[in-house]
Image (cartoon, rainbow, N blue to C red; front, side, top):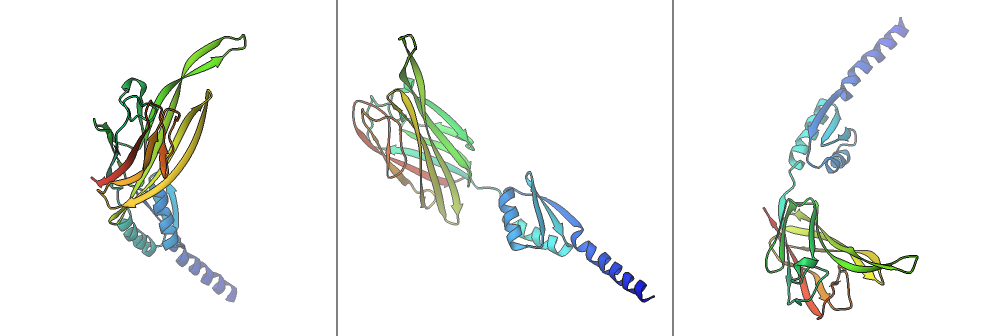
Length: 250
């Protein structure tokens, strides 16, 4: 009889504990990975898994209610932003390569990333609409003649694309905006395309023009690099220009 009493006690204990982890809730979120990691840090005993744009939570009714209340404050749609670029300074009319000259026949503009709209104005300024925390990419490129030598001594001249890209990830943090910038450069040196990367960060108030770096061009340089100086292009004159960026809430 005592053995059956012990068995009944553990059976009731198991039935009482079972509902603590039996409830499951599926909640759609905007930023799945960030929300999942935040809930795991706040509620270590809560079961959290990500599936597409949804979070699957498992736990007691009290845990789920508390987690859902926290998600209601955290789960906000990304802020829509207007990212503007401009170049200050005089540019040479013979310049090509970084897309700052006037020779439109030698330039090709490509837009990729999470940008929703792209516009280029007459005074070398651009606009991209994107989302806070999402990268946008502005690519600038030209076609350069390259000589290819054949095994029989012949030579063929082809046009090689040189594409330079600048990624910008703008994130709103309170009344400040933080902009992470990275560039991809392509340089043509003795018939070979060499590629490189560089990165930097700037921050300021929304709506404020922020200086990213300086853009210098000369007849002996090709490509571009991001950092304290931005170098690129080729032309008959040497020019120094300032590249600036501004982020505005939409």
